[in-house]
Image 1 (cartoon, one colour):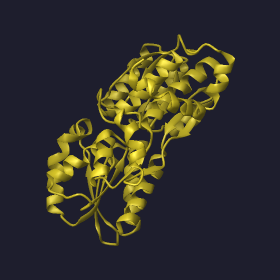
Image 2 (cartoon, one colour):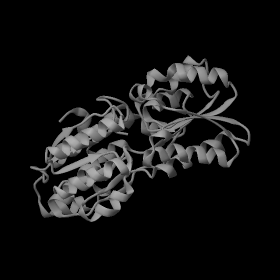
Image 3 (cartoon, helix red, strand yellow):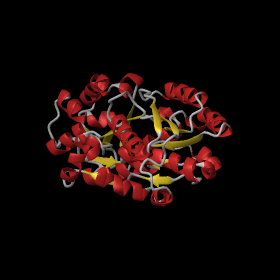
Image 4 (cartoon, rainbow, N blue to C red):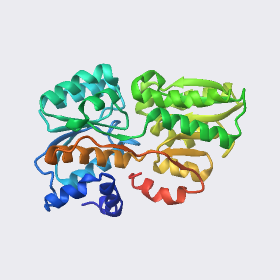
Length: 336
């Protein structure tokens, strides 16, 4: 086991307790790798080694090491259409379970979910929910590990508005994925709704696919918008990769630390550094590592012991200068 994963044992103890049923499962079968023989298709989401996706992957890998399933990984570059095609490919391989995101939405993914359960494949989601499918198939193991996206977006923007002293008519820049639709798009909608509630002037920019896959591709977009709107008071990046790149964006636009209030989602080594330097003001941490670990645990519990789907909220914690010191060591090894 690598040093990175060896350092996770204390955290994994807590993660297993969050899974509730796992302790019972281990009591039924004292074999450490009690999920051996179970084949799972796991989707970290983004490009291999990318921000956020790598945290999810590390959670998957730790669950694979601890529990013993055979896991095949699909990297989707944050492209919903590519992910849906890969999900269909995974169903065709007759795996025992699939842990993925609901990016493509219910209309596109629902028939594939139905096909999976018809074939005896356990389907579960992380990060982005498929609530209709979960309601239908929860007794058969469909669960969700992540954050209620609309609530998370609304909470982040509300907190940012309060801390920045936002007033009616002030400009805010929201860089998000509203156009993606489904549950994922609802996080951006939550952000916008919270700002509009206080009467802010919301400037919205949809994240294009090039920037979605590589945040550096968005630098010119950010510089151009800020150059045309130097009075923007708050910037929200509704994307873990873009949040990790805030320091790059701010310096490219000639901004000084604490000049603009930046709020975003998800921790990374770069995000922790940006908080310490004063470029990033506020982050919601939704625990992508646990999203990966617990979604595999969900499949193992259902396959081996007949558990219904777990529904676990991993989000809600704000990270800023006051507490980043406690979070940074975990972010540095991409487990938070």
